[in-house]
Length: 393
Length: 99
Ligand code: SF4
Ligand code: SF4
Image 1 (spheres, rainbow over the protein chains, first blue to last red):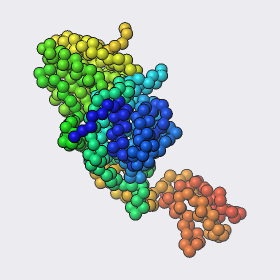
Image 2 (image 1 turned 135 degrees about the horizontal axis):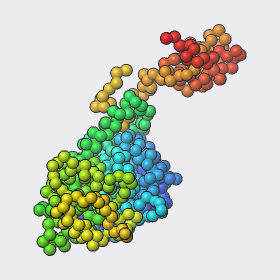
Image 3 (image 1 turned 45 degrees about the horizontal axis):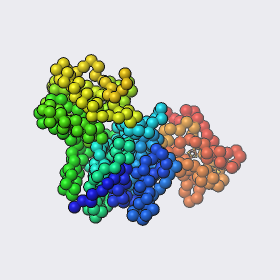
Image 4 (image 1 turned 90 degrees about the vertical axis):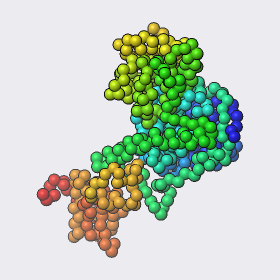
């Protein structure tokens, strides 16, 4: 059924976008934009897509143009990375609060400064409260699959929220892998046509987008966004299941890897989950009860499912590839801690900040974390609950 | 206007009825109130053209008054009025409003 492809993460996202062929794609054409848009621009130049491709003067404008197109009723996409996402910030919130189902691949890279262009999650973790769904990808196959699923998730009438599909800068974005792509007609049928409920171009039923919304209604509109986020987990699951029917690859909010009987568990997202899987395989073969919980959907945060999956563990290490300065731990760690609160489980919990600015995380680092967990399983949560993996002391 | 619950309003702050700003009272924001003098007005309609809030009221091409429910008191009408003395004068709201 599928086509075997050799693609980088950037190519995989661009290939998915070619097949989706959105009505409008707006992009800032130079750094911090990645090769992803370069590839998509090639598809436009070659006439492979009908999309209206708008080159703008900044990332702030890229998101603004995408918002405008989506409000006009178009299926609109863009892509960004690192400081580009930071520059979009203001409009990122407006996209979500205007309930525009934009899909945006984001190549996860460090926020400067000092200037750095390599992988970490500080860009997307920084906008975890912006009202976008966030789906993290482990490899190029997932990048491709997640972009295709994101269209259906974002445009679902119970959701109508924008979605970021994230993948690790360089580690995934610039590394070629073998993956399986779907045939064009299959993707066309999968994404279908987008019918927006409100469009600025319909003069028979004129609407206003983005009006003043003060003390009397702003709060109610935020409550609606909360509701849409609450509806999203079911939609993410349903779409993940339906996608399995056309591709043979089903997806859920989380991936439990060797959690059966695991007393020591690592929680990770992105490409590090792949590294952790290799270590788990090795240690399992040596008879050790270790496992991995991969978070695929970070927004909405599947708190009940995570608490359930971790309930039988004795010690858990949460890996964070970003810092929440001044906070008690990284963003993933804090939310896991909150998810476990009140569940009555007795788990030793430790947080590892790792991989900032592209610092390599090796199998040895993961082994180190599992070794630490042996002590933590015995003695409980350590007093130094936030540690650093791969940092020179 | 009865305020509605979050389940009863369109999502995303979208406004479905065109021109419904009319039912939203903004006149209370005013600091200065334009006072129109029918005696000196020559009905040139400069104020009507210039008013950013469509608050100059007309009937058959003649000025009939000012819509105080929406006029925000910017004073553009008084500034533009060409007659001397002006047919629109701005007065502090606290001096003219009846309580
Ligand atoms: S004060 Fe301003 S808003 Fe009021 S009527 Fe004059 S021009 Fe219009
Ligand atoms: S600008 Fe002055 S004179 Fe002209 S219509 Fe308005 S109030 Fe009357």
